[in-house]
Amino acid sequence: MSDNQLNVLVVCGSLRQNSYNAALARTLPSLAPPGLALKAGPPWHTMPIYNHDIPDVPAEAVAWADAIRGADGVIIVSPEYNWSIPGGLKNAIDWVSRMKDVPFKEKPVAIQSCATGVLGGARMQYHLRQSLTSIDAFLFGKPEVLVTFAAKKFDEKTLALTDQPTIDDVKQQLAAFEKFVRRLNGRK
Amino acid sequence: MADRTVNVITICGSLRKGSYNRIVMNALPGLAPEGMQIKEAPPFSEFPLYNADIQNATGFPAPVQTLANAIRAADGVIFVTPEYNFGIPGPLKNAIDWVSRVPNQPFAGKPIALQSASPGPLGGGRVQYDLRRSMVFLDAFTLNKPEIFIGNCAQRLDDKTGKITDEQTIGFIRQQLAAFANFIAAHGPKG
Image (cartoon, rainbow over all chains, first blue to last red; front, side, top):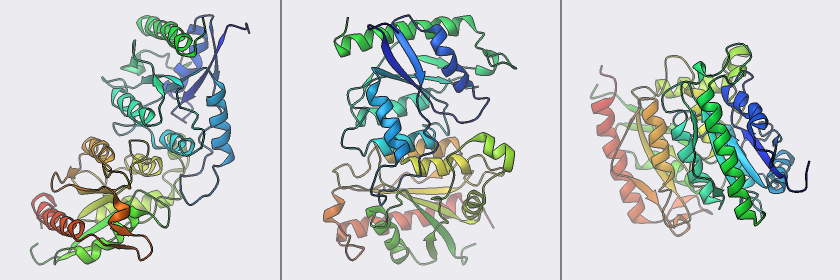
């Protein structure tokens, strides 16, 4: 890993094994420009259900927060549940938003989503932008990655991403995200 | 149908004991119009975080089924929720995500009303529109008006006595509950 490489954390909003979003998240390192080193974030599904009466932020949330804080940027790859953010992912965001040093503050964040339908997870993305805005993240704009009709774009058995236009869009976004992160972090 | 009691359940979006939204929720039975009974829905605090693999392997967890059944049996549902990070609290959304997967969808055609309290000035101005959106997807019928946004709620609710102290807020809530009764009569199942 070179000195000039950016560390980017990849967070996946789905837990199921054959998730298209998880498949996309796994593919990202192979589509990233050389200046980005991508790695998967620690698990969020082990965090307890958020309850303000619990006095200390749980260890799993602290670990997640530390990983985000330590990264130069974050990419969230998530499905859309009920026209919005999956509750589990939002639960994780709720936990870390309570910390004195909120990890998302001024953190460059890009969003991607896969969905089997026509909107590709768009409703989730705009809600996620809304919540991340409330905790002062620096949201990357365009190009957006909204993978519509995902079932046709991933291999049925291996879940490899097979759709070339999608591959190109993702590459473009990752390259643009690198520029965005460098500009914000003041690194050339 | 006219003489039947209307049974409404309430779902609180906050789990903490001293929650302002819980104070509001607890006040609702006493503010309901005649013929409407209001009680709290079964809890979602023990739901696992949604994972389709759990659903496929071992089915719906028992507390999910309990809540789904209660929603299905109710004539209406009132969400009383805080706003977390400009949106729906994760645990509440997680509960909706689980219930949304249950066959014979309990929210379909269900009359819904929304209320929110917040120490800040907007009173939950963002969370309710987000919640409406999820309810549209689930084909529920959400009451449009009156809206209940209790802003600066620390001045309107007493968290020591657990009561709403602001008369104006009490008045608005009574109005909304009365409107909800009419809404249920118009939209609920007939007969």
